[in-house]
Each structure stands twice: as C-alpha cells, then as structure tokens.
Length: 333
Image (tube, rainbow, N blue to C red):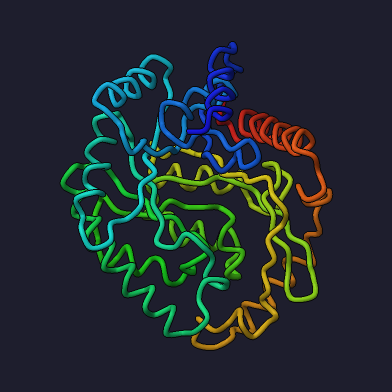
C-alpha cells in the first residue's frame, strides 16, 4: 500500500462516521481517490463515509490477527463485507486459501469475474471469444466446488462479457446454491441488454450486487455510457431493488459508481460484432431508440481536464448524492 493512500484511509477512519446507510460501496466507487482495496482498510474508509459495508480483497500477506480484526470490526460496527477474489486458473489451492480466510474473517459471500476487460475490446475474433468461454468454464469448474465446500456463496459479475441470454445457462450448468450472479445493474447496456432485462434474467440466481445508475448519449459509432448519481439515469432502481430482495431476502446492495470519462460503446462498427454469431439488428435498433429517448439530464461526468482536487470534489459530490438517494427513495437507510 502506498503511504499516501494509507494516510488518506487512516485519516478517514479517525473522523466521526457519517450517518450510515445499509447500502455498501465498492473500491471502484473511489476511482479518483484510489484507496486501499483490502478489507480492513477499506471498511474503515467506507464506514467514515457512511456506507454499511464493502466488497474488498484480502492482502497477500494476511495473518490470523488480520482476519480476526476484520471480523471484529464488522461485528462492532454492524457492517458487512464481501470477498473480492479472482477465479482459479489450473490450481484451485490459492483460491481456496482466500475463500477459507474470507470465511474466517466473516465475509458474507464472494464476488468474482470471468473477464476483467470488455468483450467488444478484448477479443478480436470469434475464436478468441470461444477460447475465453472454454477457459471460463475450466475456472468455474474449479471454483464452484470450493465455494460449496466452505459454504461461502460465489457471485460472478456480468462484467461486459456475457449477455442476458448467455449467463443463465452458466448457472444452470453448475446448479449450486453456492453459485450465482453478482448482478451489475448497468454493465450490460454495453452488450445491448436493457437494464431490467438483465436484472430480471439473473434475479433467480442473485448472490450479490453492484447497484448503479447509468446515463447514455449518442455518438458517431454508437453511444456513450456512464455511471451517474443514483436516480438520475435510466435504470429502474425502485423496481430492481425489491425484485432482488424478493429472490434473496438478505441480498446486500453494494454501490459501484465509477467517476471517469464516459465509455464508448461502438455498436455501429464491424469490430464490435465479431464475437457474436451475427449482428442483431432488432437489439441494436431497440438500444439506439432507448439512447435517443433518454438524453442525459445533466452532462455525463468527466474527469479529463479536471485538476485532482476538482476530480475528487466531483467524486465526493456523486457519492453524497448516491447515499442520499439510497437512504430516501430506495429505502436503504
């Protein structure tokens, strides 16, 4: 951990905590500040900012005392944490070490991904995509038994890789009460899935979540996509939250609102479609109609051209607006 980052987190932990809500927060919601992503350190920052829990990793050199301190912090402060852990490659032992430690430290569940990038940017051919699919299933076949063994549910995020049609087949294939979805409310707009289409498709398998709202804006090769303050975008949050609670009553809502420049979704280019069997004109037309019908209420957030202090102020404002909306209209106080 860099010294400057530690001082930021330590200072936050010493401040009186803001009035806390039940909604948690992911490290990526502090994309400008870049605090430690490790459990105890990030829990301290999240508590100081008024959030009810986190998704966080364990440090590589964790000790029994560290795990004990994480568990005791959550117990004392009424906060939750969910383990961030990469899927295993060929040897499940490193993954199992993290899962076992997470369980000891009081983690509620695990959040992981199959792809760290974006489908339409990462793969240059259909064969590249098919190899990713094969590799993903090899990794999941190693991970799911570990989650079952330690009785710690594993949620795989829709991380701009699988569509709303493809992902349910993964959960049916492994069919385990300890394996399901980390439902990101906004990511699949980049794959031309409408938000509620995705949420409804994955709801039966929800383990954990990334709650966010999204703004969209047309550009020459497709559309721009950006996280915006909760309640200011196109996601039907008031419908999504109770739906997921009905499927998993104890589900946590962890905010994952990144402050950055808008992403470009180049759905009008040939390269965008190389990992799909054929371009889907109906889905494309539907998404472009959605984009055109919902111009952003205010300019999409951007950090390019801002000083660090200005970017931090923007991030703080968006975090505060999200907290207020979660506590009010969403009932996550």
